[in-house]
Length: 103
Image 1: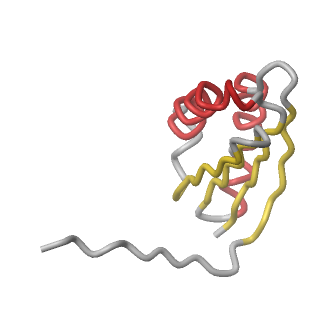
Image 2: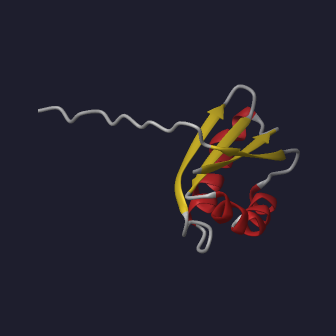
């Protein structure tokens, strides 16, 4: 499994909710981008105006195949004064613990 980490910086704190909603709406739901995507995580630091998006991919080939569309979407959702940086990783460990349902 592989991961693309995209860091958006520079959103004004008072505009974070709008910036986050825009990214959440566009990024993980675009057709062609999610075919081999296995998951996505959004992290926010509202005080500093930072949003980190981690997308998880079946393999490196799938992640690389989505790079062109991901670049286009980053340019579309990056707001004025905001920057976006991207890093690629191999996932060494992924553990998801789901809360048990209350009886």
